[in-house]
Image (cartoon, rainbow, N blue to C red; front, side, top):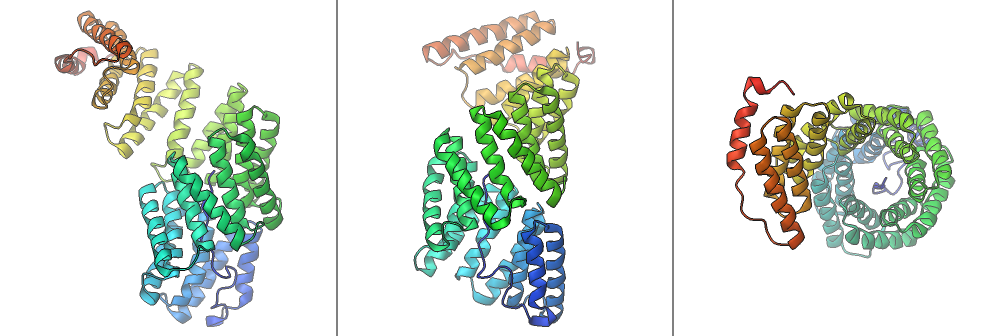
Amino acid sequence: MAQQAPVKQSDESTPSVATSGGVVTSDFGLAARYYQQGNYVQAELTYRNIQARMENTLGPNDPSMTGVLRLLAEVNVDLGNYNQAEEIERRVLSILEESVGKDQPEIAKALSNLGRMCFYQNRSTEAESLYRRSLSVKEKAGGEDDDDTATILNNLAALYRSQGKLAEAEPLYRRSLAVTEKKLGPEDTQTATVLNNLAELYTSQSRYLRAEPLYRRALLINEKVWGPEHPKLVPTLCNLAGLYRALGYYEKAEPLYRRSLAILQSTVGWQHASVGSVLHNMAGLYARQNKLPETEELLRRSLAIWETTLPPLHPNTAIAMHDLANLYVIEHKFTKAQPLLERLLAIRQEGLGPNDPKLMPPLQALGEVYIAQRKYTAAEPLYQHLLSIQEKAGGLGNTEYAAVLTKYAFLLRKLKRKADAAEVSAQARAALSAASTGLPPASSDRSALNEKTLTLTRNPRATSGE
């Protein structure tokens, strides 16, 4: 769990308007105490009450509103209400652009926070654009790197790390960490955030000896600042558990996952996206120990939570569907795997389009599940789609393409189409030969075969599934 960080205000618990319109410092103090306790629901309600009272006195677009609005956006992020948080932060940006202009440091803060909310909603391109605009505004303002710059660098690095751009992410994390330790100190929570993220990058590179002490240092900082039962600890607890899982130290990993679940249950409740993440990671731990019933239960729970708390096309939901379907296939529960793979394919097609190579794994998995159930007619268009994607991606001369052709030939034989099966088998042999020699395969035209097979699949007598 890479952690994105909000750009801090000079004093996040008591904005400068604390005494405006009958709103006293104690109101902000009460909300801050709720937040410190991890009681985000009450904190959010308190901030909304403050917002309403201030708007009644100052008006909705007064620059003084930005302080409470930012606090309200942040608590909504912690609650997983990313759409609401984004709407609030966009309002902050609009107010600031009207009051201070578009090239001031306050604009950079709003852009960075808005980018973070886009990142959480899987809108990476938009998030990167906002981070880069934020850095540009900071550079125009001049001066040395400060803690705001460090936050933007951390968030941009987290985005790159999520995209697998590890070489670009690491120097940004290191620069962010150096600035944060200098400006905020080695025991600040933002320092802990960057330490966690840098450790996560090292873990993804299997540099475990470098990662573990960074996770432990981040955990100690957060325990000292927030206390031992605060949800801010959960990302680092889970990441450390994941490191131990990768190393095979299962007895060390499980208590960390259980501690994370206990913290979340007592603070944000079970219906929170973070609970789904912990359950999914814990399922991975059980899967490594071949505890399949426990794995299935946790995967079903994580999927149910993510379906109700995340946007419809969020990658976490697709991952959960894939993993649960894969487990059902291992257990030969094909009737349970089929609807999950059908939904997964629909989600991927809607998000990626019909010809993206990322569609190949769910296409192949669903095709094999159909074949296992002798639903051969249903499987054929999936293999045709799969081969079409591979051909457009230039995969005519590789072993993966040959393997799909071989499977397709098997399917055609099951459909009693021996001549077509022989033709596809010949293409598979040619592809294998090309893969071994490094030369492109001899030109072959499957268009006539595709036309013929598509006609047959429309024949009512060929749709019984046998």
